Amino acid sequence: MSRQSTFSSTIHVRDFVDAITDDPTRENAQNYVEIQTDINVFDEDRFYSPDIIVAPIRTRIRAYLPSQERGLYVPNAFFYTDGRFTTSLSADDNLEINIQALSLMRYEDSLVLQNLPLANLRRHPGDVAEFEDYRRHLPEKWCPMVTIIGCVRSPSDNSADLSEPRQFTIETSIYDASKAAPVQFSVACFLENTKRWQRVKIPLTETLLSITAKVAGRTTDTNLLALRVLDLTYLPRSTSATTIPTPATTPPPKRSARWDDRASSSTLSKKMRPLEPIDETINSDSNATSSTPPTIAECASPPTTTDVDDPSISTQVTEDASRPQRARNTPRKYLDVV
Image (cartoon, rainbow, N blue to C red; front, side, top):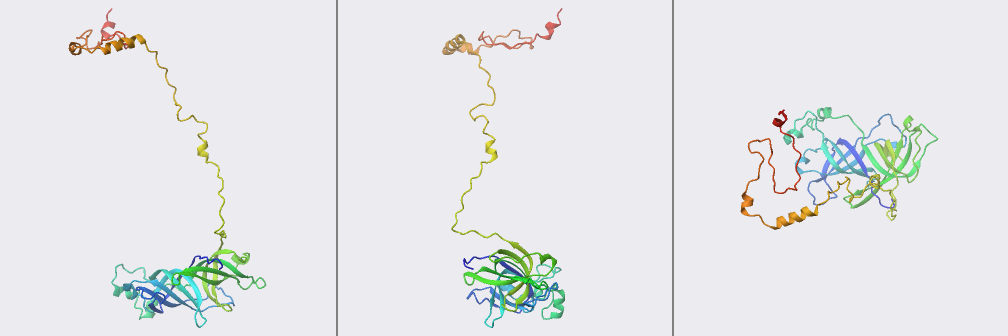
């Protein structure tokens, strides 16, 4: 691809170990291994195309594996792996799949107890050496599944023969850590001749797609990885990196307009009570009185009371005759007098 873009291309494989060696792409790197296997590909769901060769495909799985777990991945041991993948042609012109494993797990039966010793775990769900008994505990065979994002390069609509699956080629690219650069490769995608895909048009050239598919084999003429499409999604094309987007003028939020007709923060929301007029004569008398400091006798003298023996009559202070007095009710004993 011209811009050397990298996309997402992942694969899920569950198969048997053929051999395990040190990762040849990482020299002097401990705990990095390469698992070699011929992934199982077979006729599935009555899918058939004369343009596809259904046969095992050589696969190399590179992963980080602690030294204490390496002994679990012996030949014929069943495993699962997920990771990014690319395809390439070997020296003898055979198609190969290269996987950078993101997860690697050896098959374990659900009835196994946790924290088993390594010697027992190595024999579970049976001794690999006794393969006939070992494989009775394994899941059913299953073709690898991929999810790939790429651009359509060469559509090939076989409209004349509706009995054969239609096909198109997708080109994609992922980042290869061993080469520190993007790696490009192409795959051939096939649409089944079923009711689901009969009215689906072949995507146009340069269309960006996301595809979920199963590995069906390799093509007879181009030796590409052949995929049976399960799901197809059109993706928008990304804009050029040099294009500067024009900032859009967004209207002010409605919440800010709610306060346009409200009173400002300096205006009080409650009406203030008017202040009573101040008598200047009282202020002058008070100032004159306060200017003369009281004597010790005046401070020590108790206040004058109207009737000490009657607790219903409150005490009144007579220091200032102009001091406002509270309205008081007539005591009950005076109301009973005829």
